[in-house]
Image (cartoon, rainbow, N blue to C red; front, top):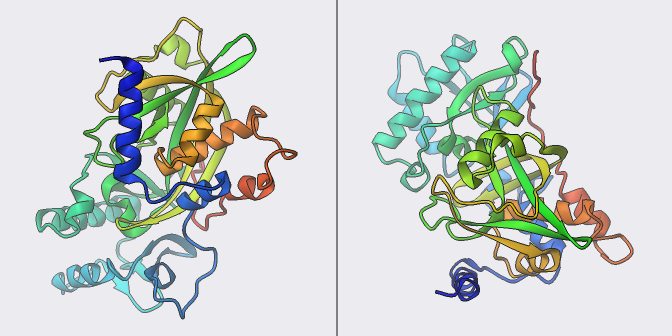
Amino acid sequence: MNFLFLSLSLSFFFLHKYKQMVFKNLLEAVAYCDTVPYTRDPTSKNEIHHATPFMLGPHTIGNVLPSVLPALKEYNQLINQAPPFVITNESIQFNQDINNAEKRSAVIKTLVEYWRENKTFEEVLSGWRDELYPVYGDDHEPDSIAFVIERASAVLFGISTFGVHLNAYTQKEGQIFIWVARRALTKPTWPGLLDNCVAGGISYRYSVRDTIVKECEEEASIPFELANKARSVNVVSYYHYSSSGLQPETEYIYDLELPTDFEPKPRDGEVESFYLWPLEKAKETILNNEWKPNCALVMIDFLIRHSYLTPDEEPDFIEITYRLHRRLEFPTPRRGN
């Protein structure tokens, strides 16, 4: 099958399968990902405004939605001799005896495995990864890690997570071309949508650079000697709400200029194909709502940093830059603490 025809066919199919809307401008594309308002409205019927803070000492480490809270209360009542959580109308906290990272991790592990076995939140936990994410907020623990949690379950607690995204590009006759990935149809989340060339969550015990180098090899067959040249350039943050739960997230952004004769190739099955596009094509597909929402933000950040979007030409330039760097209330990694 002709490659261009395949690309156009996939674009048409996924545009119609997943599209909620096409965007009038890039600010709408950013707002589509960053959906949680800064302030709560107690009069609203939307459950976003009625989440219960998950606290660790003075820190808010997550937010539990009303749709999740009954299952948490039910589980807590099952363990009647020593309930692992103290749940009030104002907050959720660990029982005072669960006072270190090891104990907290064990409690969370037992809880989410119980939910999984009993098919509670089945749609969310069907994406089980056997991958642990660190949760921060305990200054007495190494790197301030309060506990670890199965990646798929983090949204149920509104846990702040961290990832890394790579913009791979090349230049021809002074023009920038960007490598864009098409997510595999078998992906548990956002199958078939457009993505940055390389992206991945930062798992427990992995550094940011370790993650980007690993993901380069696994997802795009970019060897170490090239991947190690990737440059840390920015972060993008947002707070997303979906039917799965709350997802506050920060993405570390890397750029990597690839040789013109190098072509990324799918390796681990997470990517369907790669396209090499001019920047105007990337912008066009963002406006068509063809991208995984957070990856569109990373691409917009690239367009700004490489002066494809400028304040003289983009009417929402300042508001876009504000929205790409969402202020989040949660503790962050503190290496070597």
